[in-house]
Length: 147
Image: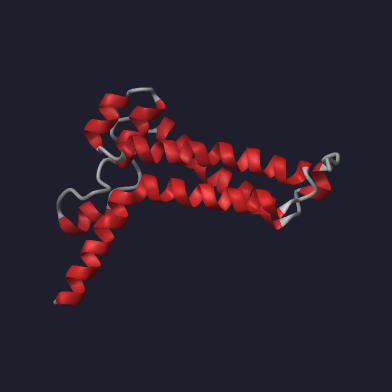
């Protein structure tokens, strides 16, 4: 059953609040990627793993890659980090999903069905996007347990 959306009343629902915060964080990542460019190379947030290990890691080059992707330079982004385009697409899809699922949730009487679909799709996309990172983490944990 459809019902009209009342913005002030409906925005107070926890699901909508969580989606709004998540959308804002993702938007911040996109803005960060748009503001800072590879050409200028003045990224204010350094790679902590590169500082600690004094070398490249699986996440090295993501900021540079995102900056290239926001400008439509896919090949250049892959050169910085081969996993960058997949993760960038995950963030982009999540931004769209936050809006779409919030509207569906509000439009169709706050149906829990939409939350379940959202969670399922988000988990599947997360695993697909971050699988190389999950694998690396698993290998590191197993290695550490053997010591």
